[in-house]
Every structure is written in C-alpha cells, then in structure tokens.
Length: 128
Image (tube, rainbow, N blue to C red; front, side):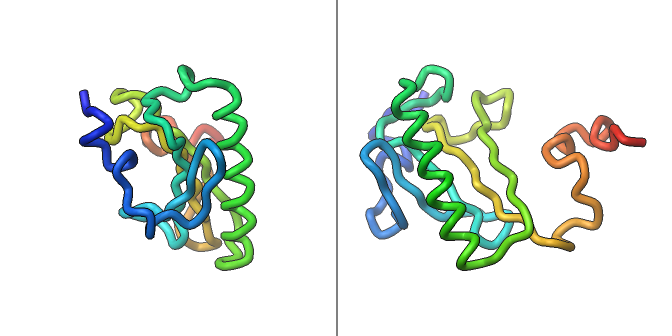
C-alpha cells in the first residue's frame, strides 16, 4: 500500500492546481484521454470514495461543477463522462481517490453509445 509520502496526489506541485476549495483541488490529468481531462481530488488521503466523510464528498461534487463551468467556457465540449475507479478491481492505479471529469466532443468516437460499458466490450452494445 502506498503511503501519503509516496502518493503523487499528496505531493503534487502547487503549480498543477488550477482551482481549490477547503477540502479538495482540481488539476488537469497528466495522461489525458481527451482535451481538458480533469481530476477532482480530496486534499486528505482517502483511497475509497465510500469511506470519505460526507462533507468532503459534497465539497468534491461542488468542485466538479466549478471545473465543468470552466471547461464549458474553455473548450465547449458536447458532453462529459464523470467517473471514479474505486479499488484495484475497478482499475484504480493511484490509491488516492480522484474523480475524472472527461470532456467529450462530437466525433471523438464513431459511436459513443454505451459509454463506460466499453470496459466490457461484449456488453457495451446493449441496444442491439
């Protein structure tokens, strides 16, 4: 298990932070899957969304709104994916909770229907 001394989000350079609140901050993803791919991160080291206190969860939800408003102005995306990989089985690679806010653009995929269901491609096209 990674300690907070080893955690990249606990030791983030301040110049990466584009917005912050009492309990969290916003950065652009270091490995973006779309222009503007953003992360919302609690300041305290929580690995699990469901173990985080409710007031911090509420603050992070507010940060999502703030980040979305900024992305709407900067990039004018046509949609968003919002996601949390909670636990290694769900694909979480950094064990410091973070919420992905991923701007989506018309034409960035031939057929975006199914969204996150594409992690299991055989189940993605449920409408067929």
